[in-house]
Length: 248
Length: 331
Figure 1 (cartoon, one colour):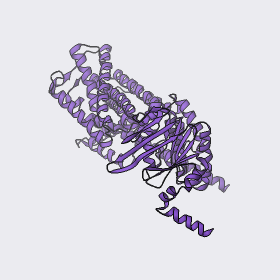
Figure 2 (figure 1 turned 90 degrees about the horizontal axis):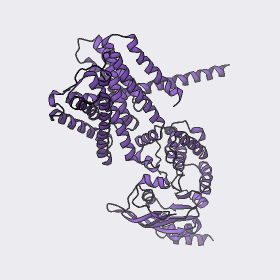
Figure 3 (figure 1 turned 180 degrees about the horizontal axis):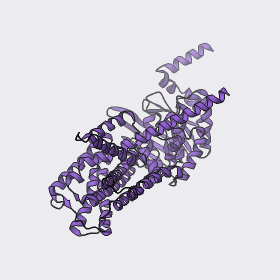
Figure 4 (figure 1 turned 120 degrees about the vertical axis):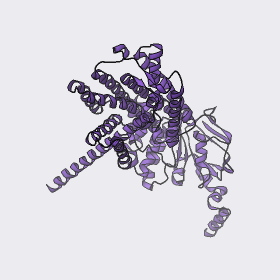
């Protein structure tokens, strides 16, 4: 459904993403993980149309969308959330979600009805009339999700929607994400919370220093020595193995 | 449009509409008409600057274009005043679109956008002052010829009703915008452009639509000014004064709110007139008052008079709520 081919994104002399590729099949939940500064959010920016890649191609449902601006991609059905939450601070929660709903509903009664439904769905039902600026971190993350969902996307790009949440908040939101997928929305998620990645994703890509170093099921990827080294440093996989052997 | 939101508008309109029936003093009627013209210009500004957050410092460009186009069409081509006004609004809208296209496409925001609009207004002022067909520095005079077709009325009250009906139309337009898709997208652009883009909002198109509507309304105010005073020159039509009036009223009344411009315009000019009456010996006292009000509003009430009213209302409600709770607990 979504395929990213050989994307390179350079900022001056810095190569943030170098030749990264990934594909997301329809109906899947695919994870994108990697250490801090690996270029995950940059890659999201390229997919959603916020950044113009130095080279490479993004295609969606078989069409090359590399040249399309962000708002057209949203109309085509690609919705993203922001890692650093971006609420419309002057609006209340319902109005925030309605901006997303207005993408496919011109009539304001329809848009507000959809906003209400989506708000309840992600657990913001009690906060719909509150100003967005009064929400807690967990609430703002839900709001990001709700707004993106209200655009009725085909694919949802979730950028660390679980970061900063406590374990019980994560337990609440994981089933919501799964139910969104079960309704036919494909999901690509950046996530650091491994419990959720293991739980949700069928396929995981690992980005480190701008390069895709591994892909596979969550279990395979966690055991991949390249991945362990990317997180813990050179030689870490070897040391872990010997420590493990000594313990055995 | 709910009754709750429409009721204050209807009350204000009814009070203003009743004034010509009660007051016969020319100075009172003159004052109201002048403030209504300012209100209309400010309502135009409010669409772009208040709801859309793109603060223009050059709405004189649209006010002046409206006034000049209407004056030239009437005096040189003998076109009916109402048709001239419609065309003038159209030309004002086009000028708005062009200025918007040039500055928004270049990504200008905040003070950069404000400065560019100021520059456009100044360029138009200098051109109008120099060109022959605008009457140059001598300005343009409309022939006094009272009659409905010429949009000239023997009674000031009739003109007040004309100005008031345009203000009323714009109030309802603003209220419609506030609840529409366009309004939601415009506010989204004001609050956070990146997030708006992510939700499929075409930021440039929304801003262009806003500046076009905004310019057309302010151009209508320019036409009204012309019809009332029957004379314009470059310093009146394209002068800095109207750019300032157009942005000051919504800022004092409540930026982005439907009633902001009308409340702000009447507050400012009401205080200005009062100051002139009570301190007649001090020339320019009304301007000094404007300055003080602006500083106070920016420093202490960024949401304007309406924002303060809303806050005190909320505060009272909370206090009342707390009081009933306390008495319940005591009982």
